[in-house]
Each structure stands twice: as C-alpha cells, then as structure tokens.
Amino acid sequence: MSKKYLFWITGLSGSGKTRISKKIYNQIVKNYGPTVLFGGDDIRRIFNLKSYTYNDRFQTVMKYCKLAKFITSQNVNVIFAVIGMMEDIRKWNRKNIKNYVEIYIKSDIKKIIKNRKKKIYHQNKKNIVGIDIKPEFPKKPHIILNNNFKKNIDEYAKELMVKIINHLN
Image (cartoon, rainbow, N blue to C red; front, side):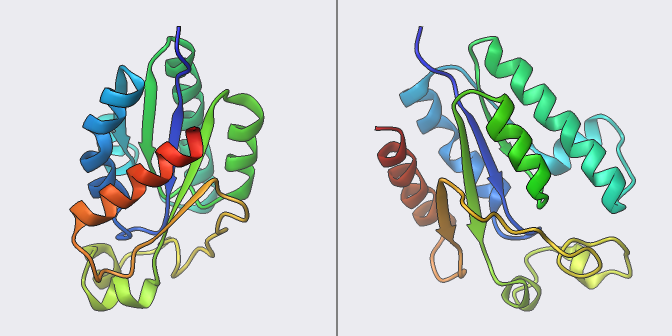
C-alpha cells in the first residue's frame, strides 16, 4: 500500500489555489493514486456554510482537517485548496495527519485586488481574510509557489508539480 497524502494548498482568496489544484489533480492521481479534490468555496456551498467570522472560519476549517484525515486514512489522497490562514490549523494538520504536505500559494493582496482576481474584494462584505481578518501566513510550508500573475495557470501548475515531486522523493 503506497502512502496517501494531504496536499493542503493555502493562500489568500484569489491567489489561484483552486485553479492550480484542478490543474494538478490528474498528475497527483497518476503519480500517487486515488485522489479527491476539495475547494473551500465548493465545500462551503455543499454544506451551506455562510458565516465568515474568524471563529466560524476556524471551526469550519477544523472540520475540513478532520474530513481530510478521515479520507487519507481510507487510502485516498486529498487535495484541499482553502484559505486556512490560521497557524493552529496547520499545527493540527502536522500533528494529526500522516503525509501532510503544506503548500503556500504566495500572492500579494494588492495585485489580487488590482487584477480583480476575486469579486469578494470589490464588494461591500465583512470578515475578508487580508482585509478585515489578519492572515496568519505559513511560517514553514513544505512548498512555496509565488504567484505574481505573470504566468498562465498551466505554468504555475507545472511548477507546483515539479516542487511536489521533488519534495516527496
């Protein structure tokens, strides 16, 4: 039985987490076996999660972590693309999930807003990570991918797959 991984892909809203995750999905399946992909927006929609305060975000993301632990224990890889900008969440993952791979998609919020990468920054909403909620950026992620929006999404996905393969070998 080969190892199964949790690929925890974190970054600000609009940094490209979900788009890049969708692009690497088939390569993860090819290289590491059965895999399920979750995007934070998708899972919020599935479970009708609508509260965005810091405490509610923390509780929601803890549920994601526990779900990921359960699925990886069933011999299935998980790619989780989620803001999850809380150090306690990442500490929990490191401690409780075997084969945890923390990937940080690093992007400048000013560029995200300028490039209109996410509508949320241009609406009159509250509890936005990076605006109202101070993000707790990863201190020691296994992999950092700098998305400065100068390449297309396929190039970033290829770069990330090289980094994943190098990290796991």
